Image 1 (cartoon, rainbow, N blue to C red):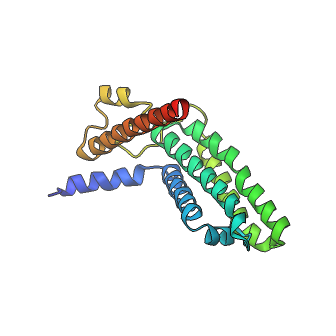
Image 2 (cartoon, one colour):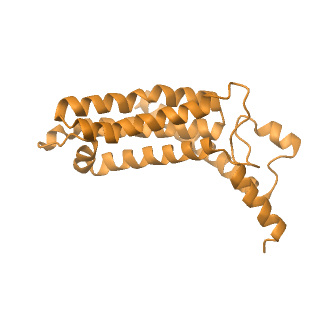
Image 3 (spheres, rainbow, N blue to C red):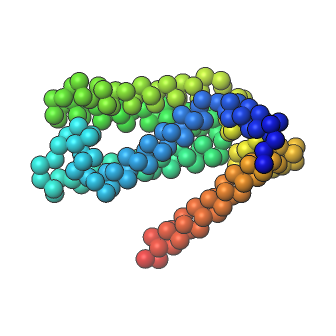
Length: 197
């Protein structure tokens, strides 16, 4: 049972978590959803993208977009877990070009300028806003993980100082370690398959 003091402390931790963390987490989840939708519902994803496809053979571009969205989501998630504000801000700033180009393609190909501005223009503005929020503090800004959760980059420093020792942070830190070990095994196996067939 939570004591009132413990409950107040957990509320404070959620309040102390910067907006940038939640924006990046939502961005990564949204990119995962876009990749899933493009991979498993390509016709609907093409229509939502702004370019309807009449011939099913032309849906290959949607699978390319699914690959791009999946790779972008994994990159954002990796840098979010690693806790590198500057690298994440630079990645998102560079990725702002993706929705700009997508919007131009939709406007030129389908002639739906208002739709391109509404969907892809708003995505570009969101990316620019998130990148600005991440980069405005400079390279020495504190890591932006939720309070009590150590980023991968600062794991040994946090443990030495006693930070991240509560039950919630210990649980999250163990899950991060598990996730990283699974990713390491997956990447190693994928490389072996690519090299040795």
